[in-house]
Amino acid sequence: MNVAVVGANGRVGTEICLILKKRGVTVIPIVRNKIGSLFLQKQGLCCRIADASNENDAKRALLEADVGVITAYMWTNLAISAKENEKVNRKLVENSIAFAKNDAKVIYLSTIRSFSSTVDRQLSWFNFKPAYDTEKKKLELLVRHASRKYKKRGYVFRLGHVFGEQ
Image 1: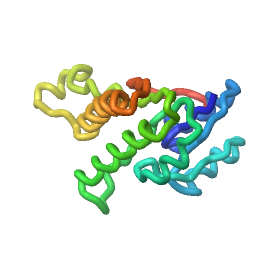
Image 2: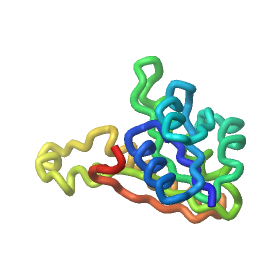
Image 3: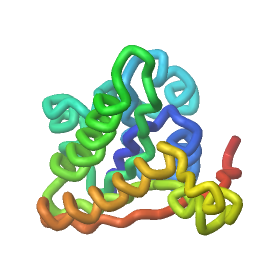
Image 4: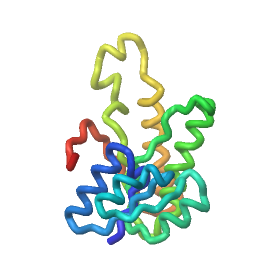
């Protein structure tokens, strides 16, 4: 089984790659640039340099994925607007689902902060939900929609804290 990890050089992505490798799974770490691959290469993993928000890159990088794990998230970038940032995240998720193998399963690792006002009642007093939390919730819905659209099994897992290999 080949497991592609989109955003493999982030905190969660790195942990997932190391844990899967330790368990003998074939891991395909996908990172945006060579610098992002250095630590994983030192751990014996062969990274694919690709931007999953780009269709051609996603097609090439995810071609052999039996399971796709999406850990990537484009943080607000001062060079682009918040709307452009949201667009990048949406393409990243949709392409990761669209271009994995036809029978692939796709797992989106979200955050418990999707429940921010439910978990932390003080936030609801101010009728406030941070943009990060709101966008993660929208991306979760996109996973459900895109999974149906591309006839793939899609799963959303909300993480709290990650304590793994590192």
